[in-house]
Length: 143
Image 1 (cartoon, rainbow, N blue to C red):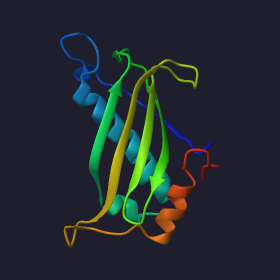
Image 2 (image 1 turned 30 degrees about the vertical axis):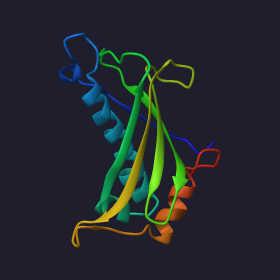
Image 3 (image 1 turned 45 degrees about the vertical axis):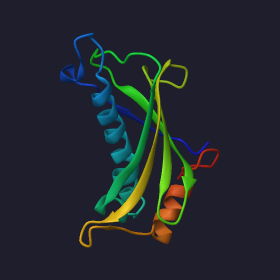
């Protein structure tokens, strides 16, 4: 499977009055996980352009169970569902535990567009970016 897995740690300040991570802070956890894939892992594979500009064009989040601050990381699984010339759709599964059998708390998707901050305009994905991202397609082999 072309799934990238990383852990992110909710903070005490992420909790709301009901004792679970606030919905807006959950989106920040998704962002932190996405940075691990698109910036850190991509750079490790020699693909640094993704870190130079990427914008979220659409965000869909389905909250299935609360995430509670307990000092532990949540596991975020990400895969590329759709890869186009100037965009990609990234799927997320957030688990409240450290393994693939842990309960799912959140399912989400983001439509992302590469962005040139110098020209303040969207841009096309480079061949190297497309190759890297294709390795994380759902059902792929990963990189």
